[in-house]
Image (cartoon, rainbow, N blue to C red; front, side, top):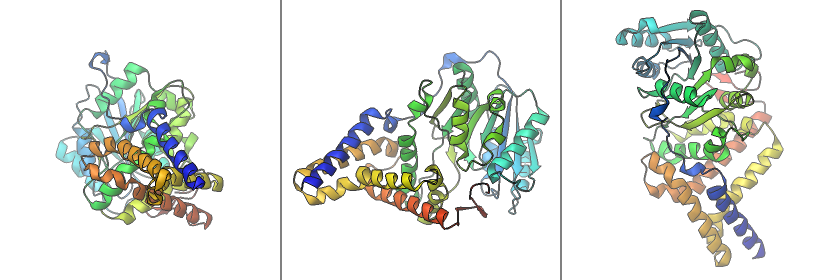
Length: 385
């Protein structure tokens, strides 16, 4: 009985801290830049897209970039990373359909170099080509081939970077919420990410917290050069957050939620695909540390699993568990509203957390078994991709 009371008190205390002492992560919403912060001149931007077997979405992604209302100049380099599904042909067709061939360069990617992850090797080739074509570019937009952008994405990214002097401006895009699996598990992905890296703390120049969302990252070219270029993080599996940490050592960065019109095109119709996404990088986030894994299991259990289990125990501990569970649901509600999902999903967050926790344990098991995570036909062990 005493043990249950102690656990209940700890769980409730955790949720009180999360709600009131974690940068308001759960209340995050899209933040457009102020209209008064328009640049006097709009700098040139080089857009780099690494693409490996992205034929399903790359046409729509490129069409959204060709439709940008950006007042300045920009050019796109798409690196076809040894695709075998016709990605390059789809990209060229999209450019022809938009009458934008002059804005797009499709670069055939070279074989993976030693010591690089696959995505960063492709990005490095794209950056080199962008620098060759337009060495005067002030910014680089690093974006994925499965992201559809709102027409004002590039303009608002540059506007914020210029007005606030940011070396990195990144957007966490909306993920799909069509299938049962997407509705059940994908909103929590953003929720957990923001809990781990409160966006307000990332934006705070005085805090060391640094993170980015790899789908949309506007990087100041001079800041990237100052840290040694993209090669400085060549072996990073979680490349977005690694880049953000390197850049924030020298200058301020910004991370926020994208408006609904900027979204991921990659579907996850089944639980297995979401499971694979988590397994691929979860243990890397823990730096392949068994101690960190143990702490994560304990922390997730106390935070998400204990409250509903304590309710079953009844008594004072059950009452405290119910209160912690209610606070958990309250914290999750803004995320569900942004995704236009029913509030009835909120009480199910403990089950969603259990799914993520089991996937994290599986990620660790595969790493120690020498299997790594599979992604697009490559094994993502350190030093490979």
